[in-house]
Length: 116
Length: 112
View 1 (spheres, chains in turn red, purple):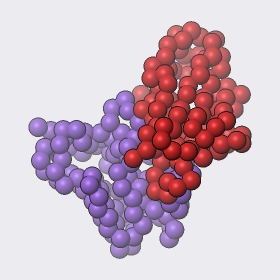
View 2 (view 1 turned 90 degrees about the vertical axis):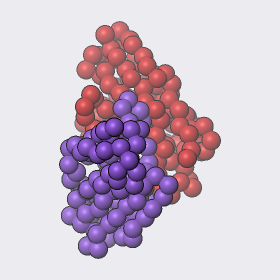
View 3 (view 1 turned 120 degrees about the vertical axis):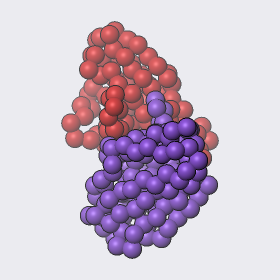
View 4 (view 1 turned 180 degrees about the horizontal axis):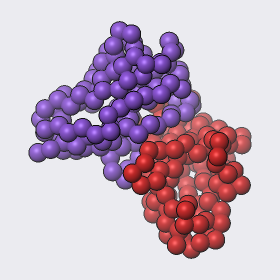
């Protein structure tokens, strides 16, 4: 299957700072990317859907001003957690689909964010 | 998207077939059944999907009942590396751009 990478894999930051997480599709053009958050022992929760070149669509209850998503190219989407707080500590996972991927989304390995 | 119901946990002996059930009684005619799994601290991995016919690939088989209200994922010869959380998801259409809504899944433990 296609490969999706995330960077960094782990990040620790101080409360009040901003953190940027990158999601890249390595061998296909990702017209749509998704961002999920997963707390310990819980399932994945979809945060937002982004289509290349347009604004992201956020799920209900997700603050768009706090979780900034940019999908400026067909191979890169970024999630910026602004003014991070300890409750933002979580596992953030992206997935991507391309114009020809009719059957599945390809998931990245995830980024573990810890806010002190 | 229709909701799914899965047992929270299951155990299976290594080398045996693992049969994971999923109920999706409110599925509608154009909705597909997808299975993903998530090994600890990794991103989910696609396994298989189907509409109404049984499907098989190199990883697993998917058996969908005739009324489509339930399905079973079969791992024919489970190994320790199959220990993971398995998610059954119902999604309208097959376009990759359509979102997946994850439930709680089944935590499958393969025992030596």
